[in-house]
Amino acid sequence: MSRPIIDRYTSITEDQQPLRPMKLSTRSRYGTRIVLELARHYGGKPTQVSEIARVQQIPVKYLEQLIRTLKQADLITSVRGSKGGHQLNEKPERITVGQIVRLFEGQTDLVECVSVPEKCTRAEDCRVREVWKEATEAMYEKLDAITIEDLICETPAPE
Image 1 (cartoon, rainbow, N blue to C red):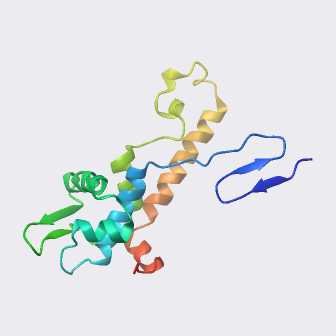
Image 2 (cartoon, rainbow, N blue to C red):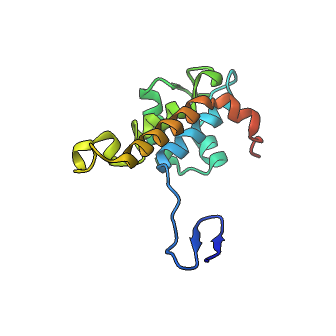
Image 3 (cartoon, rainbow, N blue to C red):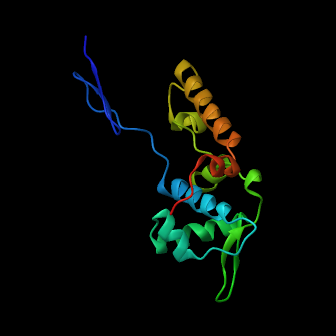
C-alpha cells in the first residue's frame, strides 16, 4: 500500500504522478481581490489603482484590464480627478464570489462534456458525467453563498 505524500501544492502517492490542483484563472482570483479591496473602502473615498496594485500585489497594467471588465459589469464605478479612483457600485453584501467568477470565467463546468455533450461520444450513457455536473453546481452554489462582506469580516486588513 502506498502512502500519500502531501505538500501545499501537490498530492501524490509513491506510485503515481503528481496531481495538480484545479485552478481558477488569475482573472477570477485577482478580480475577487480587487473587489475585496474596494469593499474595504466602501462608503469612503475612491481607491486609486496604484493603491489597489500595491496592497493586492497585482501588476498595474493587468489590474487596469480587470477593472475595465468590472466596470462593464457595473460592479464598480470610476471617479475622475486628482482625488479620483474606483469604488464599488453595490454594497459588499450584495456581491458574491460566484458573480465575480462567472464574470471572468463564464459559467464554466468542471469538464467540457457537461456543457458540450456532443463533444463526447459517451455523454448520453455516461454516469460519471452527472457527477461532474453535480460537482459544478455544488461549487457555484458555494461560491454564490459567499459575499464580499463575508470575506471582509474574515480577512485581516493588509498593511
